[in-house]
Every structure is written in C-alpha cells, then in structure tokens.
Image (cartoon, rainbow, N blue to C red):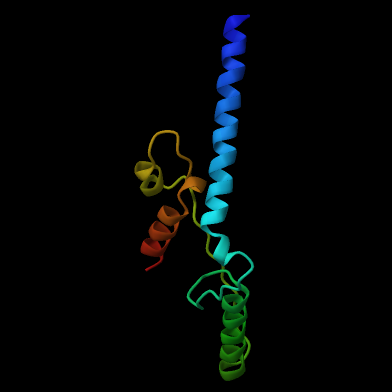
Length: 108
C-alpha cells in the first residue's frame, strides 16, 4: 500500500510540474499569441506555395499546350539505400528528409 501511495505522489508531483512548465512556456510566448505570422513563400505546403505551384503549372500549359503524358513517380521505402540509413527502431515515415534526399538523388 505504501508503494502505491508513493507512486501516486510521484505522479502528482510530475503532473503538477509538467502543468507548471506548460503554463510557464505559455507566458514565455505570450507576446506572440494572437499575432499573425506570415511564412515565407519558400515554406513548402502553405496555401501561398500551393497557389504559386498551380499558377506555374497553368502558365506552362498556356505556353506549351496540353501535355501528351502525365507521369508520376513514387519512392519505394524498401529501397536498400533507405533501409541502410535508418537507425534501430526507425521506420521510413520517421525520416521524410532521408526519403526526399534519396528520391531526388535517384531522380537526377
């Protein structure tokens, strides 16, 4: 019974400490909460980036005409180059940077 009470007290202490840290970190960033942050166009995946890519694609079609073929390429996470670079207990989805680097190297 005493061990169980000790575990409960340790959990309470840990919980209260982590709660304090969360509140403290919020106060640290309090001046930026609610302020608009404009990400640069080089930030991949934001609406501005996707809009720019769409407009670039439409400009290419307008200049060169409709494409004759639509080609897609995929990356196989089982490639030996990828699996040899992974650490223990890592999966390919844990390392998107590695997948991108190896795919671009194979593509070029």
